[in-house]
Length: 485
Image 1 (cartoon, one colour):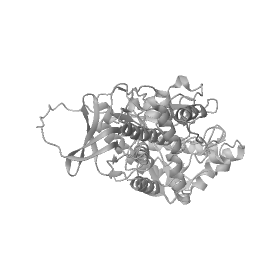
Image 2 (image 1 turned 45 degrees about the vertical axis):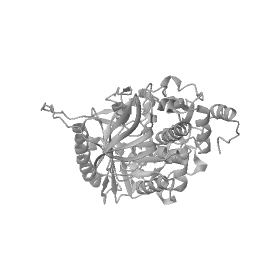
Image 3 (image 1 turned 90 degrees about the vertical axis):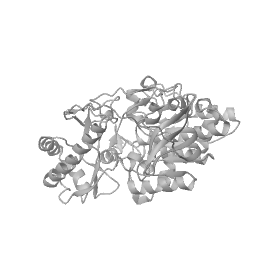
């Protein structure tokens, strides 16, 4: 077990647990699969593979621009890790001054979620440095570096339903229980994908494919360049299955943690001794529900079926040991019960695209709005300005017919720490969807999409762009649009 120290590069801190020993896999040769005809299920303008945060945003955005869209999802719900993965704490959407910079599709979701499905600080407190407010919200995952932020927790079932209804409203063809297999590639261009379901293998032809799989499955299998330089001792590259405990009183737990720091430290130390894998609880959207987003486990690959299985086994055992320990020793957990383990494993990193451009650590201090800015992300600490996300981070170096969005966009290791978060996935997904629709409408490859037209379309969809980028788009398009509100 290793405890990560908080820093600008690694803003999260958590205990990280090394993998168990892995027995070698026997080498049993191979089988030949005969060729077969595959029925075409559908033809469309834009095929989005994966219905997580980025894929849902991509499908909704492309359909809003008039594209015929198919959204392929292997589970029975949308939202990915923000719903099925129980990552119901949504990371910071305001910058360090309290300005909402994660907007567009994300803002639409929060405007439409019921009030009782969201917990977090009121808008009047965003950016507050009041010590009492910051202290209060620091125990509720909504204050960092002494600043109150808009980083709420949400009801995953409400977000599932809203995400589903939103894409259906826009005419997206939604296909659940379907796992994309291989990209269709002709003359170096992706033109669809095959997928497996209870009906067997079928294919979808598309003019543009958006890889929102999270692990880069489609672009990797199509031959696009990628990196997977995982740091095993880094929280951003760990895996785990999250869970919820019901029947708790989080106010009592927080009062204990805040008022008795020495006893809290002893509680955590004893938990590590008794349970091995051990994690602290986080607040949820309800006081009687506790969220556990760990224990985080290192050394496992999200691309190895044996590793994925091992993480699930360890996580479910940890859930049981945590329940026993917390019931005996934690204030507010005396009547706790196992409510839900996440249907989706919590993967933080597998592959990252090698794109035309990338989100880079070297640019953090600049605060420059890049010419092809398609969104803005809050910086990791108040000493850095907001960070520009370039369209080139979604475009493969050479592969045509495909865009990437979500946690596998082009970025370096340090920038991946925030680019994999749910708000940033909403940003890159919305941009990919709009770009794909424009590529189809103008009969060009995604890499040839006019950036000014893309930025104008994003502004119309409510995305926040900085004045430099938005102004350039406005000047080239001959329009006047408001960039913030």
